[in-house]
Image (cartoon, rainbow, N blue to C red):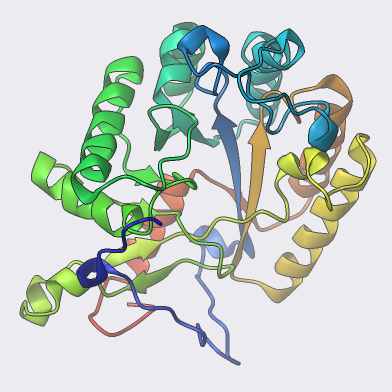
Length: 327
């Protein structure tokens, strides 16, 4: 059982912005903010090469049928991950360059270390380096001190590998305490957290009060800005069941367009498009992604932005106020 540090747990919220919803008032009157996120994990996954005694069985081309027995090495899996770093990441990189857009990377430090050319190119082009962990591994059973060390080591390793200090994060595989520990650790490091994406519960950013600031005067509290993430538009669903139910990109393209259309019509919302180099970086799916990119490029009032820029806008337009979701 993972340890739950009760004193730092963030409260659950079942109400959100309610019937009225919330308009984020995006820059230049944009109706929607679109966030492309590349989960860059290749080289940081479980592998025989790194002493894990197993090749990564999760999220590769054979999907749910492609697992390997514990203690087994499977070159097919290893090479599918290598495709992501050798080919897929550059294909996605070129697509972003074609449209003149920037993306956020959920960057695994070890993966960045093993592809320094890609890491440097992403920073050069203005893409955001977000923290995704030291390696692409679960650490749900860490103690609080182990958790804090993992967070600190992640930030330092990503800074060393990319030259950029992350201001946002999404681990996705942490302990019940990781979400709350990140801003605490960063403050101890003399760094500032701009946003967390360790949430899946809304279509707009929002503020949360943090329990360790409860006894501070309201003017001294900083709160934590949450920029929610999602799974439903995640290309990982090509390899999940139930998922997009086909390896072809057309179902993916159609679902992305439907999601965009609804959020665009509602206005003031944010759309997440989570990607993986080894999945949507495959040629057929990348073409479907490009079709979607062309579709939204032709619409007025679309702001494609990094999560860093989305968070900066929200902070400037809706500064934190204790007890308020919207600042």
